[in-house]
Image 1 (tube, rainbow, N blue to C red):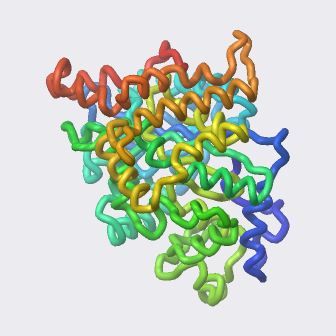
Image 2 (image 1 turned 90 degrees about the horizontal axis):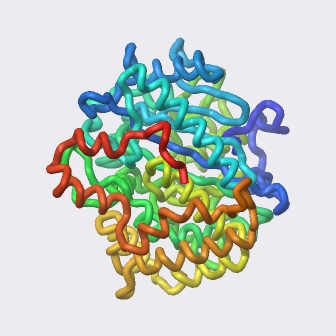
Image 3 (image 1 turned 120 degrees about the vertical axis):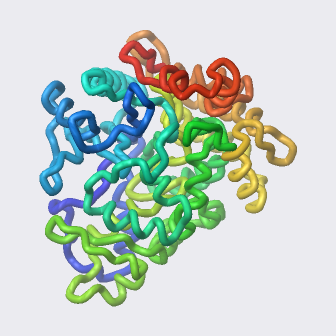
Amino acid sequence: MSEFLGSADPGAHEPIETRQQLVDYILSGAKPRAAWRVGTEYEKVGVLRETGAAAPFSGPRGIEAVLRGLAERFGWEPRMERGRVIAMQRGQANITVEPGGQLELSGEQCESIHCAHRELTDHVREIVTVGADLGIVFLGLGIQPLSGADEIEWVPKQRYEIMGPYMSRVGELGQCMMKQTATVQANYDFSDERDAMRKMRVAMGLVPLVSAMFANSSISGGRLNGFMTFRGHIWTRTDPARCGMLQFVLAPDAGIEDYVEYALDVPMYFILRGGEYIELTDRTFRAFLACGRGAERATLEDWALHLTTLFPEVRLKRYIEVRSADSQPPEMMLALPALMKGVLYESDALEAAWDLVRRWSWPERVEAYDAAHRHGLRARVRGIALGELGRELTTIASAGLKRQARINELGEDEGVYLERLHDLVRHGKSLGRLLAERWESEWRRDIAQLIAHSTYQVASAIR
């Protein structure tokens, strides 16, 4: 699912003339149901096998060397910036690098989770193979387990030279978010404005529940951090102008214009001209649209870029992006895209999922959001544990996937990717809870035990 406008998009580089163009840009992503796809983005942290410290980006045993190995051995095409390899492309898929060296696969647009399964299986095999020769392993965790932000090398991208200092000004944990955390995100299509906002409303309503179900970052700095998803908590201390839940989305009459109004008032990071980033952190997009910057005027390409720099828990671009889950081990990585596909792409499931959370007040949602970060599935709303609601949600999603009837060569529908998630919520324990328990008992607070347990394996069953 493409992030940016290109030169082939009509008017991409022309100054924006009307506010309606901003709405129309988002609506241009609308597709008939037959063309709906799922796109998944998988981030993972890499560490040095011997120590558990974050793998550097530079050097013979760094993430850049992993990228070069993927190009040499598996046919990925390097993308360069200032003479450094900072991304890879093969077909419709891309591999990019987050600010702290987290490796991200942005997969192709898949008709089913079975397609994503094949793609992820190949990706795991490739990065494990290349990493093994460099002494780098990749972990199924939502955060770097040992290294702090100050100990992690910045990836040398121009955009991070602007974002990094800005993050330190607007939030106490913004640079931790950039350099330490990892997530799995899933992207979904919509048919029209009504469909887009209905899906946005349900996905936003489910944020506390999804955060709890996929909590997997309870250990950082070599110790328990007091949260089931510390990654989720970090986002609440990153940048209040562009992060968190969006209350207006939950209103029954909310429209795309409301999202545009929100986005207009978020401070910008930059615009891109001639391959160079120009910092614009001193103004909102609304101000840039009204007054420009010197000779520069706001274009739809600038708007598309700006939308990618907003980080609410559910994001609207030309598709809908669900962002509330910690990164997972390979065998759990497809649970999020499967769960939300089961909910968002089947009308009865969408309504049933909304029924789980529709009665919560805004203060209850905020309280549940914070409690999910700290307590995971044991957090409660109106006396009901999120684990209990998680069981209902996985049942709803499984039924939705069954009705969608996407069958693999074994005769299985996409509900097969929810089996491990079913087991977790049935016992009321996220992966973060299980890690914390093992850390204090059988692992005896030994980082080597955590690394061994969390390391991606070629033989991992991605199911």
